[in-house]
Length: 103
Image (tube, rainbow, N blue to C red; front, side, top):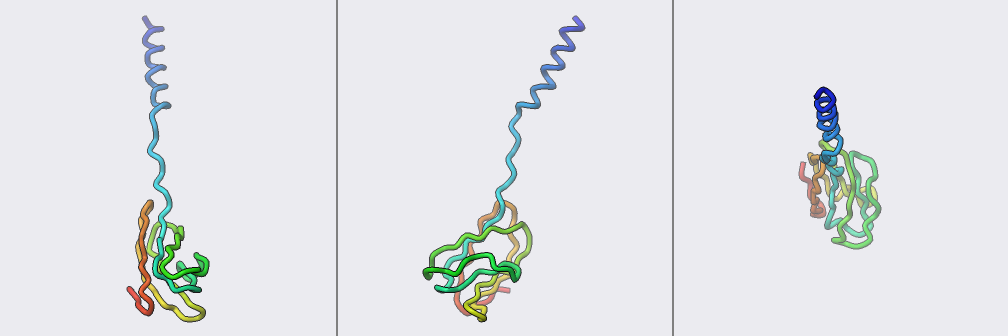
């Protein structure tokens, strides 16, 4: 009888190994649209995206969770700036309206 109880407890404790774990949320992503051709995306003053090849072609930029300063620069000119809080797993669309700021 003791062997049966020990074997049962061992099997029940082993079941926890097979439970699926919730996968971690994917990293947050900014989807920048409307950036002028030739502009570059900066997140917190660090270049985060390549120069836009076409107007209105969305660019995807990964980031970390938290508050970020998103800028679109054309040469030395900042054509768009916004302070944005982004959560883990969030896909935030940033629509660039040339010459506007959202601070």
